Image (cartoon, rainbow, N blue to C red):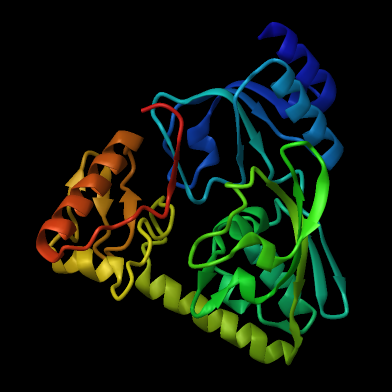
Length: 302
């Protein structure tokens, strides 16, 4: 371990190679134990070198963005976490095409697009994830999805080669792509928008933000929608109809405002959240015969 730490520090710099880092600082749920190593590459070259080093020492690793769709176990993460977020945020606009680095927040992309008078990204302005994470899960809201605007995606393969793939290659469906199945790491990509009226675009973003504030419990830490939408149903309505609004286990609660959200009331552990998720799944299955599938991804040790 010491040899690998030294090599990684030489690749990334001491400030971008952290030891025993609390994952509660890097997830929007604000829960989770410590990662043995927490790496923050600034370039694709540093990313490739870091992964090559981890592979050389047979050290497991996880790729994360800003942690907006993650639950990290209270036992933490053994091995390394490679964060592609603040150090990899760049947007280049050329006519109606935006070239975006993986760590760029969707809200930043939507704001830049609106400033340039480009429409089609408004749906994503309130999604709290990064571009890379949005591609992985084909993020969407209010009738729009990433696959609707994606032109191409640059990925790093398991063999540490950079290739460009099309959205069709990624088999993008509802909250799904084959990025993880293929062992890809999203480095960035291009989206195509439409020229529009800046004022109308900004008005639409303002209206969507108003709807989110009215309908979602944005004042509490969460990972957004906790469960995927079951075919023919809405997860939040099923949970609400099961009488679970306000249900609390430890510091985790089903939101009174929107039952599709499980929130951290201030002192939740990941175990609290997982136990509450399991309780909701059990009750909804028993009452309605519908199996709820988590939208959040779990990493680490319970």
